[in-house]
Amino acid sequence: MLTTVLIFLIVLGILVLVHELGHFLTAKLMGMKIYEFAIGFPPKIWSKKGKDGVIYSINAIPLGGFVNLRETESEASDPNSFVNKKPWKRAVVILAGVAMNFLLCVVLLSFGFMFGLPQSVDQDALNSGQVTDYKIQVVTVLDDKPAKTAGVEIGDVLLAVDDQNIKSVKDLVAYTGTKIGDTVNFKFLHNKQEVTKPIEIAELENGKGGIGVGLVETGIVSYPVHLAVWHGIKLTLALTKEFVLAFVNIFKNLIIGQPLGVQVSGPVGIAVLTGQVAKLGIIYLLQFTALLSLNLAIINAIPFPAFDGGHILFIIIEKIRRKPVDKKIEGIIHTIGFSLLMLLIIVITFQDILRYSHFFSNFFSNLI
Image (cartoon, rainbow, N blue to C red; front, side, top):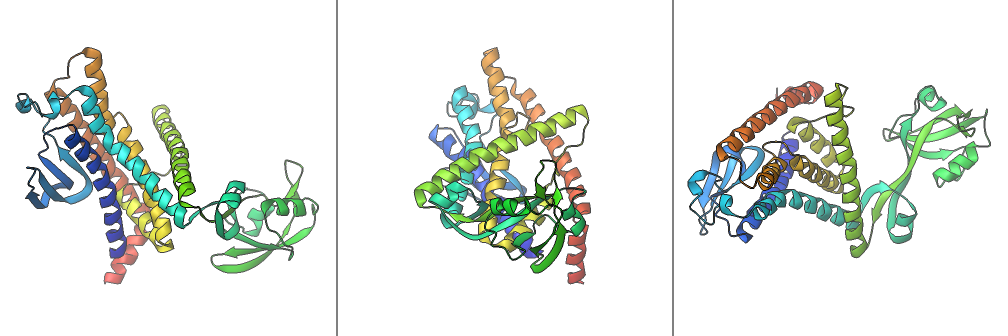
């Protein structure tokens, strides 16, 4: 578990550092006065004042970070203060953190595609990329179908069917389509062991023969540098769309009182998942870090107090009203938002501890 925690802290530290660097560098570019650049939340572990007058700090609670621009009325007389800069400049500084996390996702996925990332194999991958570790994998198992009865599970890898040379899902469909009512021997790789399951081919709703599974052709796909960057950008945009739709669905379900439809994890859950992904190899950890970075960007863009999107919302209100919102009122709203956020993290963390209780039990058993 100590290794898991260390890896998680490194990953989280990279995500936070990149995000805060976005705010920090653009604030410098805009000529704003910066008081402190911090990774983590207080209490302080280490701090030092740089030659540029900025205090650089590392804090004890590794759940975020901040760039202190002193958004207070006491800085009203300083032309370099954040509050005295034009709204568009403030908006750029705020959005730079989100942009940097998007950029980190693109960079990590691009590097991944250079060396090879696990993904579904389509014609584009076969034509322009190099595919290794090709396999046909089970991604869904339908209820009340022969595969479910035979014990086929999601993640199983199809190795052979009646000793036929099955090279693609298309080949499998063509073969099973002529075997309705017959028993066919399917060889799977299940939990790193080869198992053979005799399964009767049933007539499915589409009139074709099958056993009731969803299959996908996967492999480790790598591309030349220029194509790797293009695929990194394309995948980031596709994932952004999926993440945004997922968040919209979560908020919709919260409003109408329906189940969320997804499993939400906090720091503890993410730490456990990070450890599990790390065991698969560095390339999987790279991909997972990219997903976390994109997730962080989208969450920060939500117009909720304490998030970057919340600060942008106040700038929009300022432009509409043609005068800024009282800083004390804005500060109170952000403090309330941050408190609610911390409360939510505590609740989710408690759920994560219950969900992964076996993980902690094993850890403490090993200590004893």
